[in-house]
Length: 482
Image (cartoon, rainbow, N blue to C red; front, side, top):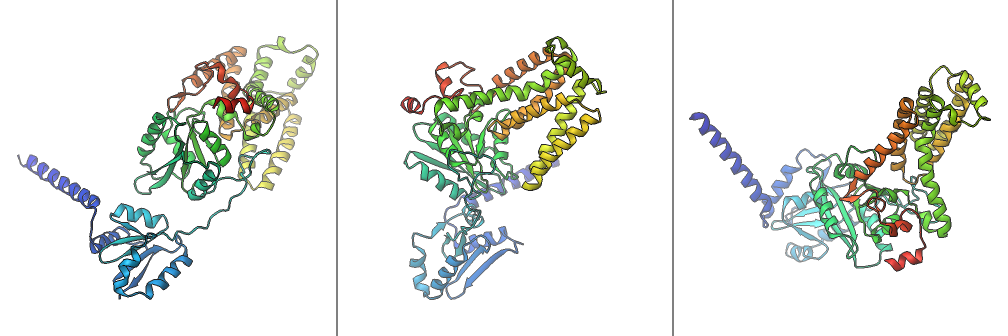
């Protein structure tokens, strides 16, 4: 009986605390002293929080000095010093200053770079955010020849302006959301009204609002949390740091997401073939662009299967080798003590190490490592009898083909899958290639992005959309279609 009573009292106290907390956060009209005390308690032990007081006006201003624009703030203080107590309220009722009524809005305002002024009656937001940051420059990860050369930066306001300048229409709508519990990150969803799907919009909003992770530092981290197949190596959200690509996706009916402090935007729903597009495709004649696009699909097959085919042929299927090439291949393989599968895995892994080293080192040093390291190590490996010179040509061709893929995320996925094909062919030869392709196609067919098939328009089949996805049809006809 005593246990039940204690449990009841404990539950009752907990319920009362929750109700008090709820009532305190939802009450719209808190007096100045109580909300000031809540603010001071909330930011206790924050030594970087600055405060300016005006005793004759009974005013306190709190701000983070490195987040506000100090020039605007000093101008505001000079005006405040010259007004009388009876003039304070009309001065603060100016439309530039926003009245805040709860702690959540106060915390959001001061952490986003505004100053907060507390009076006896009300609390105001002073929008003096610092506007400095990285200037707009050319994208390093998505280079184009025939296209615009500006890219997103870490400021979401600047990114929104880059999109608004290109989409000069009131049909461009934005929705502001917050991600996380403690560190609330701002996310904007953008879409063209009447073009984007309302069902997709509600679904992506629900997924973003369900994220309570405070460690999200970038858009690429956010999309991994909200995608439908986190264990798949293939990217399911298209991410870009180019505003022209983002605007093109908007007019295609996609929903775009921008996150503060991240220079990347995500687009959804997308298919596998969206990752094979580049803005250069739309700056050239459609016949030339179609040829380049077909070349990319061939490059994927080369990246996936070229090294695996070498392993299959040299292990099980010597009859597939042309007779003129057979003596050269036998001579090259005669000095290698390892089976072809071990030889291929060793070279592919070494290539990945060189690629990663070149990406992490400074630009000039990275280029030197990639070129000199590949030549020196490759030549030394052949002379030492660790690998054959023909395999070096095969691996180099596979690596070059992987660079043709426009999307870095998709290129990384293809390189990972390539190792699987090499292992399968080491066990089963050409049967391993057929088996691996079957598994890969089944996996891609099972993926969805916002419940949209990943292989659309091939699975399900929509032949009339082939000229707008598999190839690049004439722009005029595409405009007529829209």
